[in-house]
Image (cartoon, rainbow, N blue to C red):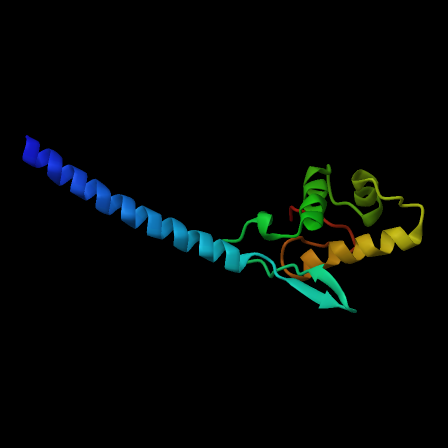
Length: 125
């Protein structure tokens, strides 16, 4: 019985080592998959990665995560104005609404958000 206990402890130590190495590898992969900041016009911006089947929304910049949440919670396809209203953006000012439209289009271009032909955004097709 004592011999079996020693063998089990040895196997447990090996399993813990394997688990630790796998956890480190997964953490490294997550860090390398995180969106990298880029430069546009001399300003730092977060890039929206192209979507792959195994990617989670947590890889998106926080602004885009909030936008997707608003579109998902809508009763149906939405235009930019209702999204801006839900996010607390002053939609009466065109200069505030146009950047939001840009933020809605970049996830569309990268496969995160469908856009209907009439210009509305949806998470369901």
